[in-house]
Length: 68
Image 1: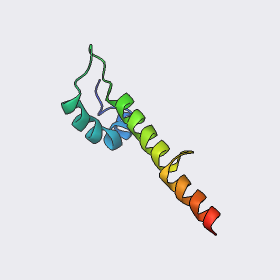
Image 2: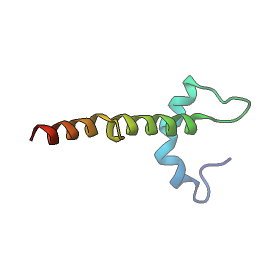
Image 3: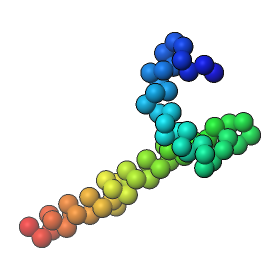
Image 4: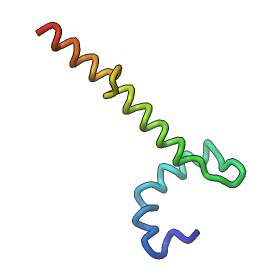
């Protein structure tokens, strides 16, 4: 697909640099690029670990409420 025509540059420019780095580590599987799925999973995991129900920030807030 030509990413230089139409609206594709608006989508490709912000994301292609990080996806291309990930493609060097994880090549396409059966011709399917799985790097966007990997990044969605990593971002979701990070979000859950930081601000999820059992996340670090949630636990700090809970402890500060019980102390004060």
